[in-house]
Length: 449
Ligand SMILES: Cc1cc2nc3c(=O)[nH]c(=O)nc-3n(C[C@H](O)[C@H](O)[C@H](O)COP(=O)(O)OP(=O)(O)OC[C@H]3O[C@@H](n4cnc5c(N)ncnc54)[C@H](O)[C@@H]3O)c2cc1C
Image (cartoon, rainbow, N blue to C red; front, top):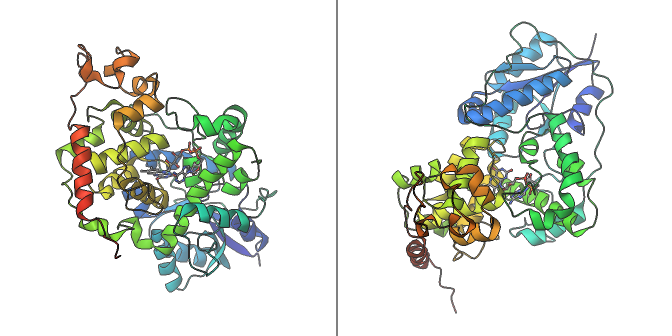
């Protein structure tokens, strides 16, 4: 009798550098490639992410010669049914460390299905890098040192031959979710990921340390959606980096992703709750009209609005811009970070609960290794410094394209600043900065002498 296994694709929609897939193949004469369209995935994702996922599944299916099983329903039920129908001997996966994935896998294992886990979506699995006293790191820089010393395995090749179980009627529901009208998303799939990585190495990696902060330039890799869906593994990326300054800075960014996954692994409640609990007691404003204006990119601050419209149009936002809009929401509008994080999670095609929740908490000042809590980004100065020519603003805000560099960051100073329908400022930054500092003062912990 033929030995049969399932390989369940989750955050690893690729064939190359996929040790868990190789394990499923090594243990079988033929294997069943599976993606389960869990209700939670379909319901939580906004239109952008759904469209990206549909495209990524189509690409994966093409690599699997049209044999990807895509079945909707509860994972335990889908797995049980396939195990019985095909006399499956083992279900192989890469370990998932996000709180939702951990709970889902526990439920499946409680239902009596054993998941054989090999590897994870990280170079070093969350929980592995620890301080000398075996406690987890709480600060990034020492984590980075510990992570570098720990090291990681070399990438593995894609399987040479695939002996696949073909889907029967009804077992291949690849959704036809389309990109929302007026939006354009980057290409999904393993081939697109590898192409992007090679192009970035050729064109921008050597200048990464200087160009990565300029949202109007193609100075960053835009690999985050590919990493999110596992269309490329971080090991593949790390293996090509050398010791130059630009490469080192890039390696450090990859390490931020690993750090936040580690922090969330040890503190799963921080996907929604404050890492520094005293911030829960701060005075906040409800997420009403001004929140909606922030979501719509209509705050009247050009750098903030360009960023929010980039998110809505492309499902992605530059890191510098993410910090500025997050600071604006939490410190100029005094709205709790979770509202912004939820909005990001709905739109981002690279949505990652660890990087998102902790990116927000870092900016709000309540997270790990936080920027000094009293730092409030000035949205005008950030624009002048990181978008000096206004290229980013002009790309996303047609209402301001007529303005010169002098006025584009402060349309209120130009006589025709509002002539094309750009909204006026919803708050005065200089006033709200002081208000923010006053609210922070109220929860300040006085250290005992
Ligand atoms: C408020 C806020 C929310 C964020 N939400 C997410 C999210 O949901 N998903 C996500 O992948 N990243 C998130 N980030 C981190 C960062 O903004 C993105 O990873 C980065 O902009 C992706 O673009 P890139 O691939 O061109 O990055 P590059 O600059 O090319 O960096 C390479 C890779 O390093 C990792 N990386 C870079 N910067 C960070 C960082 N600050 N934190 C964690 N990993 C990083 C990413 O995997 C990225 O793809 C968030 C940051 C902030 C401030």
